[in-house]
Structure formats: structure tokens, C-alpha cells
Length: 260
Image: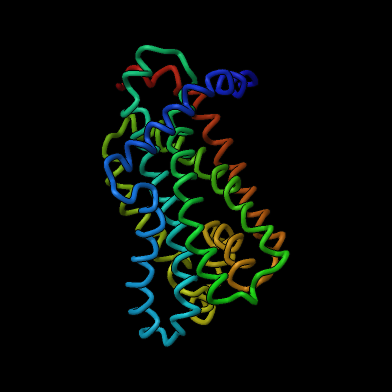
């Protein structure tokens, strides 16, 4: 395992090419191209915020960027997790012909999604600059740190799902249910104050998704720095998932070929 990161770095040109190839294929022959990464979350935000702002008696101007930030982060987490479950299956031709570290095939999805997320975040920045210029400050320097943090969480999570998914092909369908449940118990679209007022503090305080969202929401929506607790939860979640992924890789990496 000590040489595993070096092996991944040695084939960096290969997995980077795969990531860029996936990105090009995603928007091939599209008129707007990668701008869809901005258009789609904005359109969904407008639709949801119009309805939810009335249901929850919230100002649409303040609630819309809250929803937009949740959409951007949640779409990355969910797509990377489900994509990870299929990563080894989709890369079976490469796996059968090469001896590259298997983690590069989940890194491929992680990087592609991260680029799309970074582009989508531009819409949030523009929205805040126009609607809430008073939030602009030094705390905004903390917002970009969500990119490496979310990647450090998504990559081992996708790798874990890949090892399970290559053995149990029903995993992507099961993940759809699990992620839907996680969405309902996380402050993605619902304000965290709703959970606290309902006596559901644990669903906020002990939810890694909440702390991950705070990395971008605190500076951009409130003009405040994320707390140390937010960073500790993100780093702790990443460390735990990485350890599980390493143990699963040590036990199962050589067996993956037999399930393809």
C-alpha cells in the first residue's frame, strides 16, 4: 500500500485522459456544451425555490441561493457515488488488459464531476455578487476549499462502492434509495433551522453533508468563516472512508477481475 499512490501518479496521464474523454463525451454535439453545468442547476433552483419559498414562508431571494448551493454539492456527491458503483464494470476492458491500480477508475469519475461542479459554482458566485454584494469578504477565501475536501470524500466513497458494485450489480439501484433517504435527512434543500426547531439537531450536528455544505454556505451566504468543527467533520469523514477503501482494496483488488 505504500507504493500504491506512486503507482497512481505514474499513470496520471492515463486517468487524466479518461476524465477529459468523459467530459467531452458528456457534452458532445451540445449547443451550450459545458454551460449546461450552469443552466441545469439554475433552472432547477428557480423551479424549487418558487414552490418551497411559499411552502416554508421564506424569501425567494435568500432561499434560492441556499437551494442552489445544495443542488451543486448534492449532485456531485450522488453522481460520484452512483458512478463509482459502476466504475469497474464500465472499465472492464482496461482492467482486463492492464495492471494499473484500480482506484484510478474511480478517480476518473471524481475528477470529471469535480470539474463540472466547479463550473456550476460560477452560477452561485454570480448570484451572490448581484443579489448580496454585502456578503463579499475575506471569508470567501474559504469557499474554494470545498473542492479538495469533497474530492477527498467522494473518491474513497466511490472506490468502496466500486468494490461492492462489481460483485453485486444491483447496487446502483439500491443506492438510489439510500441517497434519497440521505437527502431527506440532510439540509440540502431544507433549512437547517427547520431540523433544529423540530428537535432533530442530530441530523444536522452529526451529518457530514451538513458540515460539507457549510464550507460553501457560511462564507458565501452569510459572509462568515466555516467553523473548525465543519473542517474536522469533513476531514474525519474522508479519513474513515479512505481507511475502509484501503482495507477493501487490499482484500479485494486481485479478485475484481474474476467478477468482470
